[in-house]
Image 1 (cartoon, one colour):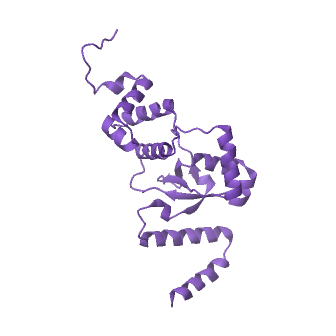
Image 2 (tube, helix red, strand yellow; image 1 turned 90 degrees about the vertical axis):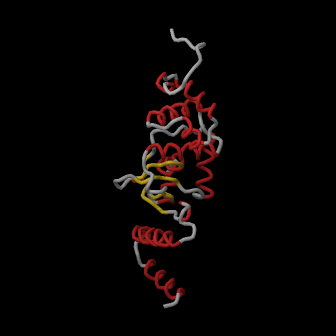
Image 3 (spheres, helix red, strand yellow; image 1 turned 90 degrees about the horizontal axis):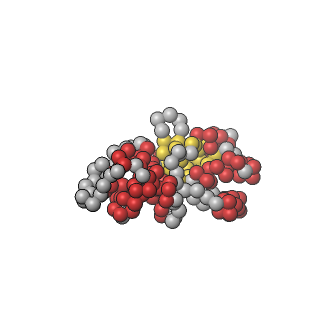
Length: 209
Protein backbone atom coordinates (compact mmCIF):
# COMPACT_ATOMS: atom_id res chain seq x y z
CA UNK A 1 0.00 0.00 0.00
CA UNK A 2 1.36 3.40 -0.96
CA UNK A 3 1.27 6.38 1.40
CA UNK A 4 -1.46 7.98 -0.73
CA UNK A 5 -3.55 4.80 -0.60
CA UNK A 6 -3.11 4.66 3.18
CA UNK A 7 -4.15 8.29 3.46
CA UNK A 8 -7.25 7.72 1.33
CA UNK A 9 -8.15 4.68 3.44
CA UNK A 10 -7.83 6.65 6.68
CA UNK A 11 -9.95 9.48 5.31
CA UNK A 12 -12.63 6.99 4.34
CA UNK A 13 -12.60 5.33 7.76
CA UNK A 14 -12.58 8.53 9.80
CA UNK A 15 -15.30 10.20 7.70
CA UNK A 16 -17.74 7.47 8.72
CA UNK A 17 -17.22 8.05 12.46
CA UNK A 18 -19.21 10.21 14.86
CA UNK A 19 -17.64 13.55 15.83
CA UNK A 20 -16.58 12.19 19.23
CA UNK A 21 -14.98 9.13 17.67
CA UNK A 22 -13.31 11.30 15.02
CA UNK A 23 -11.68 13.42 17.75
CA UNK A 24 -10.48 10.34 19.66
CA UNK A 25 -9.11 8.71 16.51
CA UNK A 26 -7.37 11.84 15.23
CA UNK A 27 -5.84 12.43 18.69
CA UNK A 28 -4.50 8.86 18.64
CA UNK A 29 -2.99 9.39 15.20
CA UNK A 30 -1.40 12.65 16.32
CA UNK A 31 0.23 10.99 19.33
CA UNK A 32 1.54 8.19 17.11
CA UNK A 33 2.98 10.59 14.53
CA UNK A 34 4.38 12.83 17.29
CA UNK A 35 6.50 9.93 18.54
CA UNK A 36 8.04 9.69 15.06
CA UNK A 37 8.44 13.43 14.51
CA UNK A 38 11.86 15.13 14.37
CA UNK A 39 10.21 17.79 16.58
CA UNK A 40 8.88 15.45 19.27
CA UNK A 41 10.77 17.36 21.97
CA UNK A 42 8.46 20.35 21.34
CA UNK A 43 4.97 20.04 22.86
CA UNK A 44 3.41 22.17 20.10
CA UNK A 45 4.22 19.37 17.65
CA UNK A 46 1.19 17.52 19.07
CA UNK A 47 -1.96 19.61 19.65
CA UNK A 48 -4.78 17.46 21.04
CA UNK A 49 -8.46 18.27 21.36
CA UNK A 50 -9.39 17.38 24.94
CA UNK A 51 -12.75 17.67 26.75
CA UNK A 52 -13.02 20.99 28.55
CA UNK A 53 -14.33 19.21 31.66
CA UNK A 54 -10.99 17.40 32.02
CA UNK A 55 -9.04 20.68 32.23
CA UNK A 56 -8.55 22.19 35.67
CA UNK A 57 -7.26 25.68 36.46
CA UNK A 58 -4.16 25.86 38.66
CA UNK A 59 -4.29 27.53 42.06
CA UNK A 60 -1.19 29.73 41.78
CA UNK A 61 -1.27 31.71 38.49
CA UNK A 62 0.03 35.26 39.20
CA UNK A 63 -1.41 36.60 35.94
CA UNK A 64 -4.71 38.49 35.99
CA UNK A 65 -6.47 40.05 33.02
CA UNK A 66 -8.25 43.41 33.03
CA UNK A 67 -11.77 43.62 31.52
CA UNK A 68 -10.62 45.40 28.30
CA UNK A 69 -8.02 42.68 27.68
CA UNK A 70 -10.60 39.98 28.41
CA UNK A 71 -12.98 41.49 25.87
CA UNK A 72 -10.19 41.67 23.29
CA UNK A 73 -9.23 38.04 23.94
CA UNK A 74 -12.86 36.99 23.52
CA UNK A 75 -13.16 38.92 20.25
CA UNK A 76 -9.96 37.30 19.00
CA UNK A 77 -11.21 33.81 19.86
CA UNK A 78 -14.53 34.44 18.11
CA UNK A 79 -13.12 36.08 14.97
CA UNK A 80 -9.77 34.28 14.60
CA UNK A 81 -10.42 31.04 16.48
CA UNK A 82 -7.89 29.38 18.79
CA UNK A 83 -4.43 30.26 17.47
CA UNK A 84 -2.60 29.29 20.67
CA UNK A 85 -3.31 25.97 22.40
CA UNK A 86 -3.70 25.65 26.14
CA UNK A 87 -0.61 24.27 27.88
CA UNK A 88 -1.33 21.59 30.48
CA UNK A 89 0.24 18.88 32.58
CA UNK A 90 -1.45 15.53 33.11
CA UNK A 91 -2.11 14.22 36.59
CA UNK A 92 -2.28 10.54 37.51
CA UNK A 93 -6.05 10.57 37.07
CA UNK A 94 -7.86 11.59 33.88
CA UNK A 95 -7.36 15.28 34.59
CA UNK A 96 -5.08 17.99 33.20
CA UNK A 97 -3.78 20.99 35.18
CA UNK A 98 -3.62 24.17 33.10
CA UNK A 99 -0.15 25.71 33.07
CA UNK A 100 -0.87 28.44 30.52
CA UNK A 101 -4.13 29.51 28.90
CA UNK A 102 -6.49 29.68 31.89
CA UNK A 103 -8.27 32.76 30.49
CA UNK A 104 -8.85 31.10 27.11
CA UNK A 105 -10.18 28.03 28.88
CA UNK A 106 -12.51 30.10 31.10
CA UNK A 107 -13.94 32.03 28.14
CA UNK A 108 -14.50 28.82 26.20
CA UNK A 109 -16.66 27.58 29.08
CA UNK A 110 -18.57 30.79 29.83
CA UNK A 111 -19.38 32.27 26.40
CA UNK A 112 -22.09 30.56 24.36
CA UNK A 113 -20.62 31.31 20.89
CA UNK A 114 -17.36 29.63 21.90
CA UNK A 115 -19.11 26.69 23.52
CA UNK A 116 -21.02 26.15 20.29
CA UNK A 117 -18.00 26.16 17.97
CA UNK A 118 -15.74 24.20 20.33
CA UNK A 119 -18.29 21.54 21.20
CA UNK A 120 -16.94 21.07 24.72
CA UNK A 121 -13.31 20.68 23.67
CA UNK A 122 -10.14 22.78 23.93
CA UNK A 123 -6.89 22.54 21.93
CA UNK A 124 -4.16 21.43 24.34
CA UNK A 125 -0.45 20.67 24.30
CA UNK A 126 0.90 18.52 27.10
CA UNK A 127 4.15 19.02 28.97
CA UNK A 128 6.63 16.25 29.58
CA UNK A 129 4.92 13.61 31.69
CA UNK A 130 8.18 13.03 33.58
CA UNK A 131 7.90 16.43 35.33
CA UNK A 132 4.33 16.60 36.66
CA UNK A 133 5.03 17.99 40.14
CA UNK A 134 3.66 21.34 41.25
CA UNK A 135 7.01 23.16 41.44
CA UNK A 136 7.70 22.50 37.76
CA UNK A 137 4.18 23.60 36.81
CA UNK A 138 4.63 26.83 38.77
CA UNK A 139 7.95 27.58 37.10
CA UNK A 140 6.52 26.91 33.64
CA UNK A 141 3.51 29.17 34.26
CA UNK A 142 5.73 32.00 35.47
CA UNK A 143 8.04 31.66 32.45
CA UNK A 144 5.06 31.91 30.11
CA UNK A 145 3.74 34.98 31.92
CA UNK A 146 7.10 36.75 32.14
CA UNK A 147 7.83 36.07 28.47
CA UNK A 148 4.67 38.07 27.68
CA UNK A 149 5.53 40.75 30.23
CA UNK A 150 2.56 39.87 32.44
CA UNK A 151 2.96 39.17 36.10
CA UNK A 152 2.02 40.86 39.37
CA UNK A 153 4.60 41.65 42.01
CA UNK A 154 2.55 40.50 45.00
CA UNK A 155 1.50 37.29 43.28
CA UNK A 156 5.10 36.67 42.22
CA UNK A 157 6.25 37.01 45.82
CA UNK A 158 3.74 34.29 46.73
CA UNK A 159 5.20 32.11 43.98
CA UNK A 160 8.74 32.60 45.32
CA UNK A 161 7.49 31.82 48.82
CA UNK A 162 5.82 28.60 47.60
CA UNK A 163 8.90 27.46 45.70
CA UNK A 164 11.10 28.17 48.72
CA UNK A 165 8.84 26.04 50.88
CA UNK A 166 9.06 23.28 48.26
CA UNK A 167 12.82 23.22 48.76
CA UNK A 168 14.08 25.43 45.93
CA UNK A 169 17.06 27.64 46.84
CA UNK A 170 17.56 31.18 45.50
CA UNK A 171 19.86 30.06 42.69
CA UNK A 172 17.38 27.54 41.34
CA UNK A 173 14.50 30.02 41.58
CA UNK A 174 16.44 32.68 39.68
CA UNK A 175 17.54 30.22 36.98
CA UNK A 176 14.16 28.54 36.50
CA UNK A 177 12.13 31.77 36.53
CA UNK A 178 14.59 33.92 34.59
CA UNK A 179 15.24 36.34 37.46
CA UNK A 180 18.26 38.15 38.80
CA UNK A 181 19.32 37.19 42.33
CA UNK A 182 18.36 40.66 43.60
CA UNK A 183 14.84 40.25 42.23
CA UNK A 184 14.40 36.98 44.11
CA UNK A 185 15.57 38.70 47.29
CA UNK A 186 13.17 41.63 46.81
CA UNK A 187 10.25 39.25 46.27
CA UNK A 188 11.17 37.41 49.46
CA UNK A 189 11.23 40.72 51.30
CA UNK A 190 7.76 41.56 49.99
CA UNK A 191 6.42 38.25 51.30
CA UNK A 192 7.63 39.27 54.75
CA UNK A 193 8.35 35.74 55.91
CA UNK A 194 11.34 35.40 58.20
CA UNK A 195 11.89 31.72 57.41
CA UNK A 196 12.77 32.57 53.81
CA UNK A 197 15.94 34.27 55.00
CA UNK A 198 17.19 31.61 57.36
CA UNK A 199 19.88 30.52 54.89
CA UNK A 200 21.32 34.03 54.54
CA UNK A 201 24.04 35.74 56.57
CA UNK A 202 23.61 39.39 57.45
CA UNK A 203 26.02 41.93 58.90
CA UNK A 204 25.93 43.05 62.54
CA UNK A 205 24.05 46.17 61.39
CA UNK A 206 20.91 44.02 61.21
CA UNK A 207 19.02 43.88 64.51
CA UNK A 208 15.79 42.26 65.50
CA UNK A 209 13.57 43.86 68.08
